Amino acid sequence: MNNIKLLSDLFLIDIETVPQVSNINELPGEDRKLFLDKISKTMPESFDAEEAYKQKAGILTEFGKVICISVGFFYKDKAQRICLRIKSISGHNEQIILTEFIETVNSFFAIKTSFSLQVIIFASSIFHTYAGD
Image 1 (cartoon, rainbow, N blue to C red):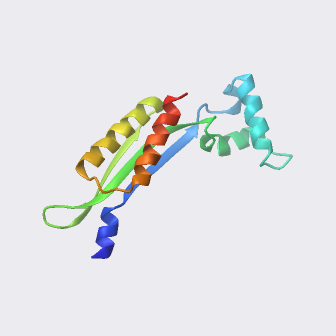
Image 2: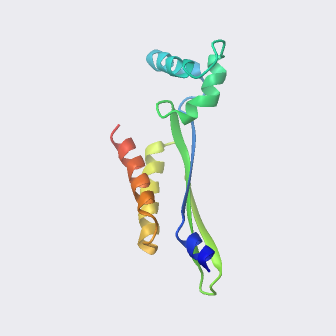
C-alpha cells in the first residue's frame, strides 16, 4: 500500500530540447563565437564545430529550445485501479509550449494538491526564466 501512496505523490516531467537552428552556420556571428568559446572548454582541441553543435547545442540554454514537455501523474480510477495520466505539449514555438505547460501544471494541481512543493518551484522557475528574456 505504501508503494501506491508513493506513486500517487509523483508528478512526472520530461522536457525535450533541440538546437535553435539546424546547424552552426545558421547562428549569427556573435552567437557562433559564443558557442565555440563555451564548447571549447569541454571538448578536445581538435573538435569538429558542426558535430559539437549537433551534440551539445540542444542542452545549452543559450542555443537550445524546448520542443516538447510531457507531464503526468498516477491516480486511482473509480474501480481503484492505478492509472497514469499523461499530457504532452509540443511544437516549434517555445513560448507557447511553456505557457501551455504552466496552464497544464495548474490544472493538474487543481485536481491533486499533494504533489511536492519542489515540483511547483521547478515549474515556476522555468516559466519565469523564459518570461524574463
